[in-house]
Every structure is written in structure tokens, then in C-alpha cells.
Image 1 (cartoon, rainbow, N blue to C red):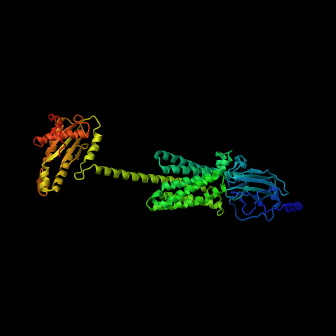
Image 2 (cartoon, rainbow, N blue to C red):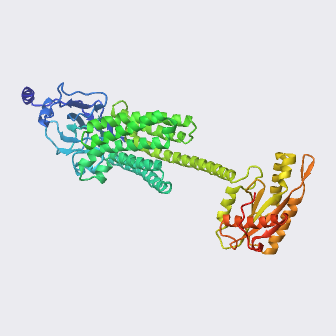
Image 3 (spheres, helix red, strand yellow):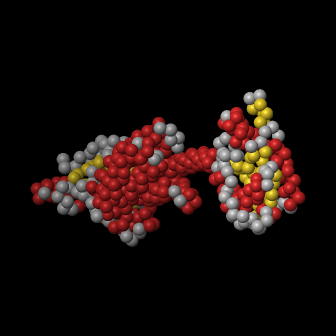
Length: 576
């Protein structure tokens, strides 16, 4: 170092690189291949040391973008500028928001005089240290007149960086910055709108999948905000440590909830259980990465995030494909949204690794992909809700069918005891008068004995049909025994009407039933009990009606009787 300094002093000049001729360019002048690069492995070099070495073999001029894996060691850059006419007002930009320690030194004129104050900024310092109040690191370079100038940059960071320096005309810089803000505003509007919308859906449906989705969108939004540098500017201004850790923590937590959302939405436990276990494991690793970032191991956390982002998206993509293959239709929307995210994440990661150089895509690809993904995922959730509603409707119909079947006599189609109890539980809860008629067929046993059970079944089916034909729509007929039927009249009727109904029932029952060329004839005995006078519950009314019917059978069968007309009603067993 002393020899180099001595040589410099003796020569009286500092070697210069080929300078960049400054001129207006709408997208800024790219400096790739024109920036001198030197690694400072010791981390102790000063600007005087670096200037002494300027132009020697220690500085290289790579034709590709300079990639820093984020080991925390300083990298020095030397940028030669050529102002061709008059004074110049330019802006040097570095499209990054995550450099921890960054110094802009100079520029120096051709004889080595500094014409600008050193600017010391980075994520470890307050946002107010950033020139031009810019989220991306930039330096305003004001040149007094024509000539050659040299600007130095010292950068050190634990997170991976791609040094894609550009220099802009001041007006072009502010025009591009305004366009970027408009684009960012549109993306934030989409993300916040979807966040609020799905938060409302969560409150309505109270579905765990929606909870995971809301948290996914929330941390995806925070990741984009951090990627654009707006968290350091607006959320954590004055607290640089939080903004610095958020660079790796927000993406890690986003991946945690994104994995849980995919696992729950796709029902991987059912459609792809092995993939589901892998996804849960990746969510755990993402959580570990978040903890590592919180503890300050930014380089390790950043590396974990990059690999986990690619692996997780691929694994969940496979899981979604399997779910779709097994008939889960909403998975196709999930695949589309996940594909958009995968492309954007891949572009950002591969740009970070130096394999791609698409400035607009690398600057805006992540938030574009996230915005598209959350919109497609919202459609996917809607598709899932429609599917769930369809399944629930089918289950409801099936449940109703099973309920009807469980409450229906399979032979006659009339209600059974369970169906009668269900109907009575609804009817016998109001003070209005209701009537229960217990009907027992007479001479039914001989029909079975002489002509067989098929003949008996045919008689029961026909009798049930005739009874139904005589009733109103809200009345009910139930078969409660071998040849016993119950009629539950759902409206209040006076005695005359009930007598008329009973006579019609007896007349209808007495009509012969044709079977196998034979005319089969049976009769009936009716017992009538009225609610609430003869009982308040179905068993009470059944017992009262049975007493009345027993009275008819005791006196010669064929006829009807009201419980109120039975003298000193005896306690009788339920007839068979």
C-alpha cells in the first residue's frame, strides 16, 4: 500500500477508467461494463487507500452485472463520468432497498478535488439519510462543468445484491419515479382491496382457509411494501433495525401462511397426503427462517428464503395438480394463480442470482405477480365456495331423503311411528284444537290367512291410498302397526265435521279391494281423541283414542267413538 501511495505521489496523477459520456436517456444510462469493482476482504480500506489503487489490476471492469452473495464484506465501485457541455445535474441509482451499509463518495474532478460531500446511508441507518427521499438508493450528482469526474461507492450487506448502476438526467429520474409510484399505487390498491374483501369473507364464513388466505395476502403485501422500500420510508421510519429485519422476516412469514393456505385450500391431506406433509414441513422451515432473520442472521435467512420460495411453489404446484386430477375443480384456479406467483418469484430470485437482467420486471415483477395471484386466488376461493355450496345442497337433499325414508312406512308410503312423532312434535305445540283418529282394520287377519301376505299387503296399500285421498294437504296418515293407522287432523273441527270424516273413512275402507281375481273386504274401528282436551302429548292422545276404539270393538266393531263419549273410560292396553 505504501509503495502504491508513493508511486501515486511521484506520478502526481491517478489512473482513470474509460468514463461514461453523460447524455439524456429515458430509462437512464446503464453502466454495466463501465464500473470498476474491487473486493475489500479486510474491510478496512479507506477512500484514500482505494483512490491510491484506482486504475491498477485490483480494479476490474466486468461486462456482466456484479453479484454479491451477501457475505457482509465491502465492495468498492469506481465510476468515471464525462460531462461534455455546461454544468450537469444527474442521478446515480442502485435499484436496491436492502443494502445495509452504503457510501457515495465524491465525485472527484480530474485533479482529485472532491466536489460533493460523502453520503452514508443504508438499511442500518435512518431513512432520512437517503438522498432525494428515494426508496431505492440514489445520489444526486451535480457537475459544475465539462470534464472528467470519478465517483466512488462502498457497499456492504448480508443480503444478496445485484449492482445494476444507472445514471439519469434529473428530469428523467423524477418522471420515471412518478410512473413507478403510480404503478405501485395500483398494485397496493389491488392488494389492500383483496385483503379487505377477503377479511369480510372470513367474518362471514369463519373458514380456516380464509384465515390463512387473509394472512397470506397481508404478509405478501408487507413483502411487496418492503421490496419497494416503502416500509422503511413510511412504516418504520426512524427504526432502521425493524426495516432491516423485515427484509427477510416478511417473506418468510408470507411463505408460512401461503403454504398453510395451499394445504387447506387444496385439501392435500385427502388428495395428496405425502405432498401435504412436505408442504407442512416447508411451512415449518419458513418459520425457522423467520426466526433466523429476527435474530439478525440476515444472510442465512435470505438464502433460506430464496431456496424455500422456489421449492415451495413447485411442491404446492404438484399438490394442486394432483388435487385437480382427483376431481377438485377449484384447483385449476389455484394452479393459474400459483403459476403467476412462481414466474414472478423465479424472475426475482434469478435476477438476484445474476442470471437475468430485466430491470422493469425485476423492479415490478414481484408485486405484479402477487397482485395477479391474489385476484386469481379470490376466484379460486369463490369456486371453492360454489363447490361447497353444491356439496352442501346435495347433502341437504340426501339428508332430507334419508329423513323422509326413516319416517316413512316402506310398504304403504304413509308415515311410520317416527314420522308421526315428528309431525306431532310440530303440531301439538299450539293451543288450537287438533284431532287424532286411531283406525284398526277389522277382518284383516282372515285375508292374510286365506289369501297370503301379498294379499294383505295389497289391502294395506289400498287402504292407505284411500285414507290419503280423503284428507287435506296438511293432514297426516301414519301406519303405526300391522293393520293400525293414525290420522292426525291439523285443523280445528267441530263434532259434526269429525263425524262426517269418520263415516267417510269407514265407507271408503269397507269398499272391496281387488286382488288376484278376488274381491277382498275388510272393515274398520275408529277411536277419536281431541287435543288439548283429551291429552297434551302424542302418547296421551294415542291412549285416549285407543280407549275409544277398544270401546267400539267391545260393542261389536265397525264404527267410531269419541273418547269423551266412553262412559268411565277403563284403562285398556293398546290394541293390536
